[in-house]
Image (cartoon, rainbow, N blue to C red):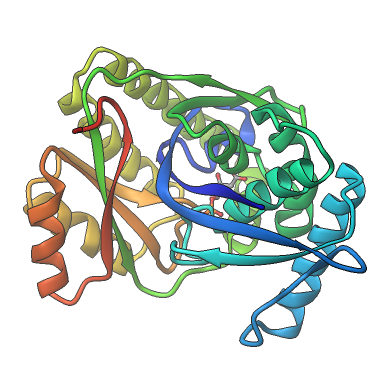
Length: 303
Ligand code: PMV
């Protein structure tokens, strides 16, 4: 028995989504696969390379999911084809894969709502208070405009259909800062100067909604512009850094319709570029020694 959870990229609206504003995110074809075999107790088999705190966190999250689903005793192993802990939703992908697998093992045919519910319980162990954007996108496996009502724990994703193929090139730059640290530092600035930060969050929310409309209208140039403006606003929030900015400019020089950091930002992490023809760009970037791959987030697929 096996189940898959997709990684994700946030096209628009990270961070401001935590404060109740809309964000646009799509699933990657890369993600985490969980496999189960019968066992004496419910257990997660972990690679020896993980640190002690990582093992403790994963074990606690898995125990939570086993309890919520009432799964029978199974031994679960994980396999990822996605770079981990760089802002591409690997913990949400892992949570959704485990949630689907344990629900299946418990005899249910999991809907995306069930997967979100169980993955949410797991994500509390990884992030504390996530916006819910990552695992909702992973479970729905569609491009979604996600919004959490202010003060509410969870939000909802509205599917955004794209009449055109929507390709991104995902690159990695610098050394990633933990999401908790970036989110916490922004929370301190926001608490000190609330109205200034709220103005920026509101503008990012508007740009995200405009970006979703641009996707639905097939206007990828307008989506790219929204991404560029969003990058400027993320920099204004103090979430960018020289390695991220350098990669953003490199992608724009290679013809990206838009480029920005994706995920938590900080000292490093993932940077995305929107391209009509991603393959030659990946080839060029790899020749330059950049770690990258491309993924189609939405729209008609070439047969
Ligand atoms: O980089 P990631 O995958 O941890 O994404 C974080 C996205 C934030 O908006 C910064 C936090 C959240 O909970 O939505």
